[in-house]
Length: 175
Length: 220
Image (cartoon, rainbow over all chains, first blue to last red; front, side):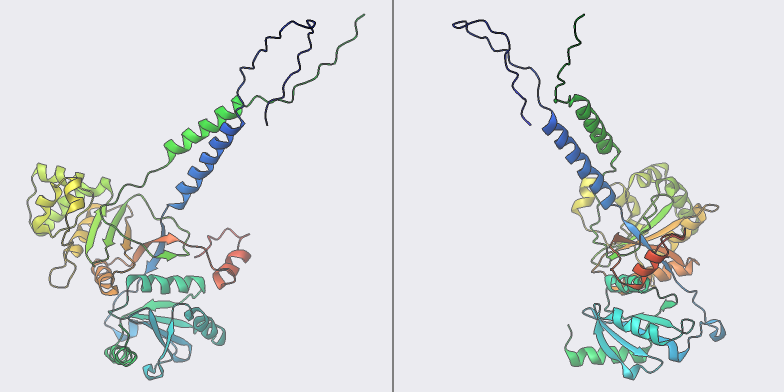
């Protein structure tokens, strides 16, 4: 984008030295480029750093059994979050049929169950145990959003389930 | 009659004006950008697909750091009232000096008994020291008292309860925090997370795609 040299048109005959007048104009194109580059950079960095928030609604704790949410056994999927990013899951009400999975594969398990059960019966119960991290809990809540699970609840594991997790962890040597 | 001379126009465009605009915009964006205040508590938040921005107004924020310690901070506007309510609730006395110091403090990271010493520390001292955090265990649940005070101080307008946890913090601490909220009959929280793209092909992705024409907010 260099400036075109304007040919001198005036002829003063041979021998007369031309005093070349240099242009005072500066090419501003690179400067504009730089300006817009910086603008783009600032626009991108400002919008990126905004934290988002995940809404969480918890159920009210109640002692009365008839106030508790009823879940159909056929439609329930229980996910227990254990130590070392491991998920234990079982269908229905029998914890002894527990199987193990990880955070990458849990999506397929949720989707499979969702396809098999009528929408109004489908319920996911999330039970993080004491060794689960906060990240695990948020990840699984996020998974609920991703898979569009309408009904889910986060509760504490029962002592039975807790023992089962402990035993499995011991047997599997998960640190 | 002289013929009109056809002037050869120069192909050179004057860039000065464009340059001016570019730098004007640049200045505007630099000035308008909200700089992230350097945080005294280092927290790595997990990511989620939620696309809602965390509320910046009328908030009461509970932070859980990687050592499972709990810190609280709140909107500048309600600080004075919260301390007043807390004093009423716990039969404490705060001098005007204490209240001033509290208003200046960016967060609370100590039990109530050490509060006055804590609020008088400078930012530099705070960044160097480690603090025990606000107690949340069942024997001495001070977080619950803080929440009660915050609720009472902001009667009449909605308070947003933020929970900002570190990736590595234990679920037990989070559950203690939730319990403290529950005892105050608060069941709605905002978990602060980093934005993440919705995985392509997932249910939510399809829903967003099909629902794009509707006015319904995506992801809910």
